[in-house]
Image (cartoon, rainbow, N blue to C red; front, side, top):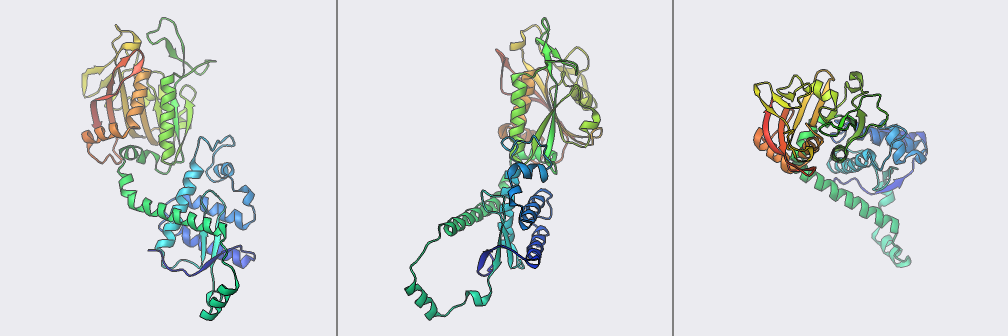
Length: 397
């Protein structure tokens, strides 16, 4: 239930003492349970409040916030990276929760109106400012017409909508946390503003089984297939919904130092050298050399590979899905890699689909948590089209 903080008015601090009062209220908010366990939400709220008090509201634009608060490059495009909008939405919800649950909130309130990054400051009116006699009210009501302030109505409705959204968010938080796709990505994205997608490029090679070979760092015109492009888009859409963003880097020219300390998605197998290297110690990994296959260290005689007697566009493909904490890069690594490009596309579909993630939970248990996971997938390929994946083997530790 919302606590009674008395009548309040929109307030524009003028003196240093008044600005200090706002900063004091801000610090109380940032120390609250709704904000103190996060880095992102306090950073945005502190920045917009301080800039407003400095009279620099012209700087409170999405692109500026992306670069100044979240370290995005100058080439940052808000249309493809929604970190500012997502964070601002969460800040609004958490402010409403803070004021609805706090017993000792300051007389100064800070709100972030919907659709704006410029905060509003509200100050509790004194008792003399809000009290009047019954006769004074009746006289005022008789002598003045009733006026409706459209801005006040809109502001009130906006606050009500945000409060309802905050209530919904609280009541549905447990349900959302059980989203199987979220459970797979949660440990990977925890504390990460962005993640690296490391993938290989290819060039055409006539006579080769797949029609292409891996491009090295000296290739002038390497490319990725439609399947790999689709996989990148799917991963980007998924992690953006969870508040992160992606950066795509080429495997051939990316060093270990560039990967270290990041969450990394390795997309593709035999055209992505880091996939072959980092999965080598795992139980399921890719056979090095020219005989492309997925093998099982526990059962060396077992292997999954394409039937090269069939055309590439009609041979069943196999893929490896892995999520593990790698010591070499000191961070989480997700491998989505097929023997061919269809397998990589299917692996990506697998980790972005609630249906497939529920199937995985049925195999490994409902709580994936921080487990290291490996999954071998099989999929049919007909006329170059990727069929639905099925699980061949799993392992967790």
